[in-house]
Amino acid sequence: MKLPPPFMLVTAAVVLLALFAVLPRSEADFEIPDAGDRDRAIGDTTKLPPALRKAFTDDGSSGAIAEPGAGDWLANHPEPGQTFAEFMRVRRNRPDETRNRIYLQPIGLFPEGFAPSLNKLRDYTKAFFQMEVRFTPPIPLAELPAKNRLNGRKLQLLTTDILALLRRSLPDDAYCMLAITMTDLYPDEKWNYVFGQASLRHRVGVFSFARHDPAFFDGRRPPGWRNLMLARSCKVLAHETGHMFGIRHCIYFDCTMNGSNNLAESDSQSMHLCPSCLRKLHSSIGFDVVKRYGALGAFYAEHELDKDAEWVTGRISAIRGGD
Image (cartoon, rainbow, N blue to C red; front, side):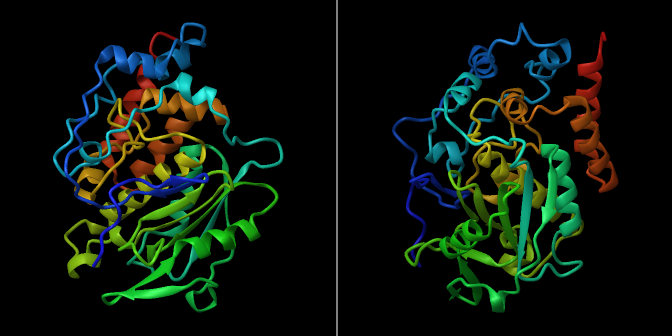
């Protein structure tokens, strides 16, 4: 079966996201950015209020990005990165008084106990982006106007048909609309599969959580798999929605906007935005950084994501320190 082509396809403002592909190392091997590079990625913060300066400071809480292994994203896709200054120079979508809500469009079933809770995904998205999040009515697979196929014994949906549907049904008050599904996806007959696809210009995207279920591959679910699947699903939802704000893959810190080539790599990466990517998101939305961390911390604590709850508590303490 043919594997995805060895690149991230970026054409006509359409992005194919989060592919699995083990490819040979590029001749231009990735070099770990140093402290100076990370500071330049954040940009000058001297004129910001004290709380924002602390929130956007490289104090070691995010950590430098790890050296990629042979099968990891940056070993096979050496990207130039995106500093805050570069982000600000690019024409991009941002919420306004009219288009200020994130819509989630469920496709197919999310069976209780065997899929991430839709309400939990909504709550996490609201906490992460500090924006109102609404559902549109679920679309049963039988009523979905999209081509499908069997890949082995796995049903797959054609992403381009779903994106066309989302463009036609985008609510007037939507900043973006994101279809989510427990069914596997493919973008073209020549491709094996894809985790998601988004049209940044049209503010629509679709991604699947199917491969985040350990049972997808061998039918077995280890102890604690529900929390693992929730964390994976929240992470990919935040990552792909972050792209909708014009945030490219982060190459500077351990960050939820890091690219990944496989589940092991993704699992090892942070749930959190680094100082540079947090500053990018803040520039588009203008949230209270402490309030945002408080909402995320409450979510992590409620769902026994203790490591992440502890990390957020440390960030709040650091930002408030000396006030």
